[in-house]
Amino acid sequence: MKPHGYTRPTEVAAAVALLAGRPDAKALAGGTNLVDLMKLGVERPGLLVDIARLPLDRVEETPQGGLLIGANVRNSDLADHPLVRERHPVVSRAVLAGASGQLRNAATTGGNLLQRTRCLYFQDVSKPCNKRLPGSGCPARTGVHRDLGVLGTSEHCVATHPSDLAVALVAVDAVLHLTGPAGDRTMPLTAFHRLPGSTPDRETELGPAELVTAVELPPPPAGARSVYRKVRERASFAFATCSLAALLTLRDGRVETVRLAFGALAPRPWRALTAEAALLGEPFTAAAVGAAMDAELAAARPLPDNAFKVALARRLAVRELGLLATGQEQR
Image (cartoon, rainbow, N blue to C red; front, side, top):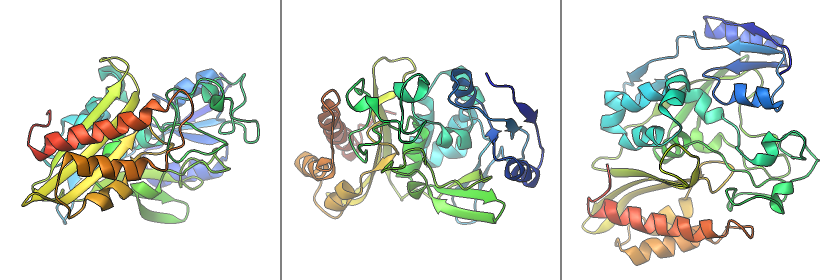
C-alpha cells in the first residue's frame, strides 16, 4: 500500500477545505470499499480525510414528512431505524440484503453510494481497464463478464454498480444533499451515477472536493406496497446477480403508482422508466408486466455469458409485482 497521510476533521467545512487543498486526497467513511482498493493498488491517495466524526450521523424527519438521512449513518443503524422501517421498508430490506453484519456496522449511507464496481478487471491492476486507466481497453467484453452489465453499458465498459441500498433509494426517489467549495446543492439520486459512454472513469456527478452530506427520502406514496428482492449465487452475503426494488399501488385493478429499479444490470442503479410508463394507469395483469418489461429490456445489449440476465430481470419483475398486487410479498 502506498504511504499516505491521515487526518480526522470534526467539521464539514474543514473536511471540504482539506479535500480542496489536496487533489490527491480521498474522503474515508466506513472504509469497507476504499481500504480494500488501496490494498489492491487500485486507489492510491496521498491523504485520507477521515469523515467519520463529522456530525452527519442522524436520521431526522423533514417538515414535508420525509426523512433526512445523514451520510455517516451506519448501514446497520439505517436498516433498524423505526422511521425507515415504517415508511420505507424497501430501503431497510435492501440494506439487510447487502454484505455481512460486520460490514453493515462499519459501512455508511454516503459511502455505500460511492462504492466502486466489483469487476475483476478493475480490481486487478495487472490487467487493462478503461475505468481504472482510460484508453487501456475493456477485457471483460471477451473475458469474464457473467456478472456484468446488460443495460447502459458501452464498448468501453460493461461494469455494474454493486450497491443494494442505491437501488432501493432510486426506487423511492431519493435526493442527494452535497456540499463543496462552491456551496451546497441537491440532485436526484437518479442523476448522480453516470453511464460509462467513452469516459467510464467518471462514475458520478460528484465534483472536486465535494461530499455527500445526506440523503433525503420524500414521503412514500399512500398505501404503497414495496419489496426488495435480490437474486444471488448463495444465501449468505454475496453481490447481486440481479436485484429489484419495487413499489406498487392499485386502484380498481389499475396501476396507480409503480416504481421499478434494478441492480446488477447496469453501471448505475437502473430505474425502469419505460416499463413504469407502460404500466401506469393500465389494468394490472402479469401479461401487462411482461410486456412492459419487454419494452424496457429492448435496450439490453448482453454479452454471451450474461444474456440470461435479460430473462431473469423479466421474470423477477413479473413475479414480485404479482405478489405485491395480491399482498403476498415477502417481508
